[in-house]
Length: 500
Ligand code: MSP
Image (cartoon, rainbow, N blue to C red; front, side, top):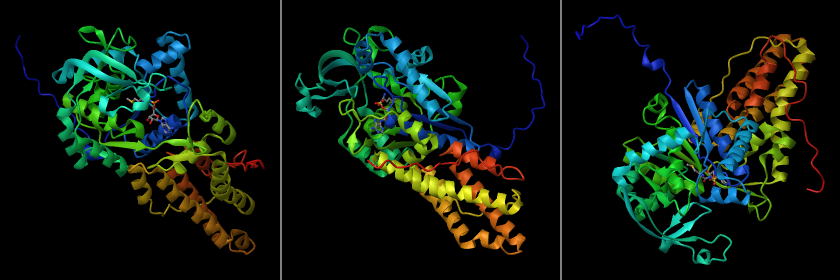
């Protein structure tokens, strides 16, 4: 065949500076051994703020979440429900999908670790890791609750007792090991240099001290005669992959690693959102796997704290687990999102109680935000026959809010936005438009009311990633020449029951 060179006029690429960088965000993928709870909701909503904020800033975004379906814990839960693991997972996975919908979480991807695409690509990853995999004997404990191998020296003696409600399993088995120890130094370097950022600092320090102790190689498979519910190890059907190692792979299987365009265009993730109990998996094991694969580490890992209810850990035995639905049915979705983003500290543990929820709802949402909107609407209707007039451009410095979102301080960002809400109410109290209306100075009145509208539109913009429904409602009120009042107030005041 004769190859001829064709000189084709290629249109110039658009200048890169106008193209926004891609943004990839993930949550951890919950186990399916129980109903979704407030902790899962918190994580979904926090990640949603980052995804919505990236999209608002024009970044092409992929936001991925899903469910972690293999392993002993899920297999046991299925057996307790007298279901096959697959049928049980099909059912439970839907519960999480419903929760995402209920929370208006804008996830673009939902990976199930039982998906054939995940399974196929997990095997490819295993093969790509093979230079760091070897066979050995594991003798020690296994914690089904955390799906974790517990080396002898680190085991809690109480849980070694077989009658303990969360007794460990004693294991003596052949399995595959991963050379985690080999990566200790490089992971540390990536964290110290901030190539791999970990927020907050306390969690960064925690992982650094773990690295200082040195990482040990870990088991990454289970014999099939001990646990069937998992993905088979390539070329060895007598073993299944350890659920954690396989679940971590979801972050790239969902992008169609290795050949998929999404993988090429969106990895490394900008932020991976996880809870504090799974820091070691995401701050040590996952980075080591990525290094072994020759891939970049995520740019940042954000580690949120734990929610307690009325000061107590949520658990089945205390019966204090609250389904997010209960709260949303009572207060509405945006009140839910607001409370968990502002009143659960972004960098620490936090408590939910109905009392603090009532107070935040009535004082901050109804009295402060709701009122600022309501007063403005009513005055424009009353004094200007609903005509808004020319709205001046917004003039507040929002750098602190942008920075807070960048470092996942959602509580801080909302504090800052609320400064603006309070500032607006104060402005109205000081300007007293109702007094101006009693004079003939229509131009001044128009100016004051238009400024109020400008502030509210700016607040709505700032609130868009946090309270998308409320932000859209506020914008809709002021989007035309005349105000379009809402059928009901944004946050109707609630009667607080006396017994609380
Ligand atoms: N399946 C693993 C994650 C695998 S990621 C590759 C897992 N699942 S989980 O269902 O136990 O937890 C899912 C997320 O919920 C984790 O980030 C965990 O920290 C978070 N939470 C679980 N309980 C929580 C609270 N009480 N409060 C806040 N978040 C908590 O771990």
